[in-house]
Length: 124
Image (cartoon, rainbow, N blue to C red):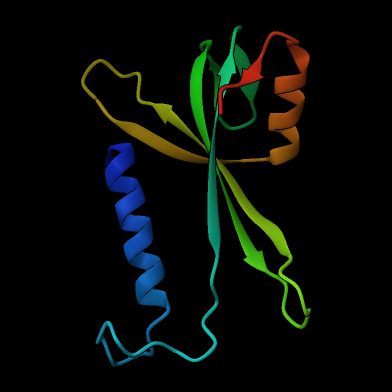
């Protein structure tokens, strides 16, 4: 299934809201007292040269959105989050397909790819 970036974000938000509800009760006003909550942060990066990430092969230079999911660490008196997953949003390049694909990647591998070309910079 091919989804646009906006539709993908809306579906993720809907899934998080459903995960916060108790089983068997789908009322939006009844939430579990201690749901597992995650936060998603987004950033935009620019690659000035083609780059390679495992599982993706070579990707063309351009602007890409990176999403990172983090979960809170329980039992602390202040908020601390740990990274759960990092994804890159890539455009589909087949002739017949349009849209975007969210692909899980290694954050360390992404940092290494960004460091390889000093002209690569964060846009936001």
